[in-house]
Image: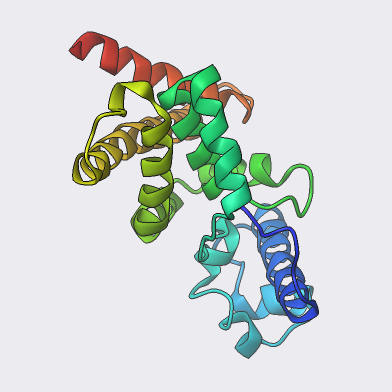
Length: 211
């Protein structure tokens, strides 16, 4: 998730509460397992009421995986766009996706912890991958901005850019999903920071074979 750098007091408190709930959910499922992690238990550990919990998340799975409304700040989007010239379109889009769907930094191991949870409870992949549908409008607009920075699309009309953005998002989103699934199913331990390079490799391999 990309957070606006300047938040009012009310928004900061809401953010802090949401992050406490996410942290509590991850802590409990790692300690007690998915079946024994409940909304009541998450709320108690985060020191909020179950009613407050549902102001932030639709379910315990959403809190565990950090599924929420995504807002991409204009300044952050500009930074992602600047990556295109140096790193290429596919690399930049995959980096954007992993930044958006990744967890906020409530603790240094949050991303690794969530990947470990998915490894232990692969049924959560369905919920996690459904997040891509929730993010479609916001992310497609951001990807369109990245596509527009690629000189190969410089002469495209707005309609052509929008179509290209959807296709690029489908390719890169698919590569991210496959990379996450491979990590979850791997018998050997894998580093979470290898996901981005693996997803980029997958997307590049497909585009090279199709060209």
